[in-house]
Length: 325
Ligand SMILES: Nc1ncnc2c1ncn2[C@@H]1O[C@H](COP(=O)(O)OP(=O)(O)OP(=O)(O)O)[C@@H](O)[C@H]1O
Image (cartoon, rainbow, N blue to C red; front, side, top):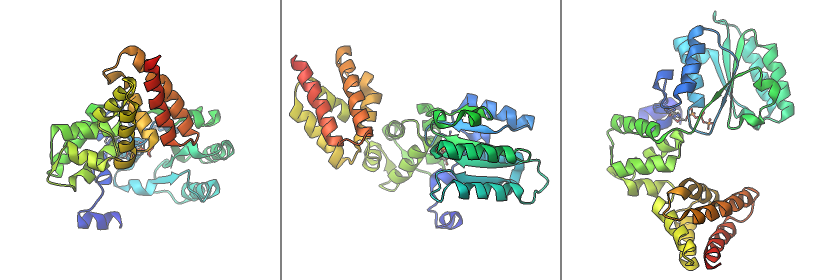
């Protein structure tokens, strides 16, 4: 379905419908946005490198820059590409060249936004660097990536680097409240807390979850949110760890089964959730330290491809046994 069709049928996805259009509308990221603004207002845009996790406003900032510089003509002066395009770097380079060479409508430069730049190999990045140089008279690049360490130094040193952080709970809650109001959705305080918790700083996830939860009934409450989000309630992960630490392995394992099977969580997400909440559990410091140590091992092994259930059961088993020592 095209964007226009979606709008007509009222099924437009909210992450697009409520994507901030100006730099001032972006929630959170205050210092980064201030720096961006000073370049935009000064009229001299450098090449830019945006780094940070998913769903925190990197693409949104790039499109807001284009809107501020070009006004209504922004689409004609802004090319968005994804570096992980499976057709390869050559296709990406050809599109950059065609865009940079095509006729100009009186602007000094156009903007090329390259998402997932860290998915390029070093060789492809070297080729990209040459392309950037070749067209730097009339083109500005905004590269976006999750990890700046994966971008080669010669590119980093040619760009002004902007770090985007996971969004604060207040920033996520603020935007969710605005959307709920605009869509005339009733949302309970617990429902809002659950959305913020499940989002973990990712605004895209928060908005998608709000839209999904809104289809389940008249009110977005805690129940509706946890039904659509494959996220454990904080109490569930806490109970699981508490049972393990108390030496009740069968109980801990049963909760783990529920999370993996009924809630449908991925093992890596359970590790992340345990890691986020470890210091909030009602555990003594020694137990938290043991948990963190075991989490480190499970995280590494799962990332390396080990069986998630085996790793998480081993983690709980180790916590249960530690108690007996
Ligand atoms: N800081 C923010 N303020 C308001 N809305 C936001 C913010 N960040 C993200 N969003 C919402 O989430 C959606 C996705 O954000 P965006 O495309 O900017 O993410 P991103 O940081 O570029 O992520 P990725 O690295 O996955 O491309 C936007 O369309 C917008 O609706």
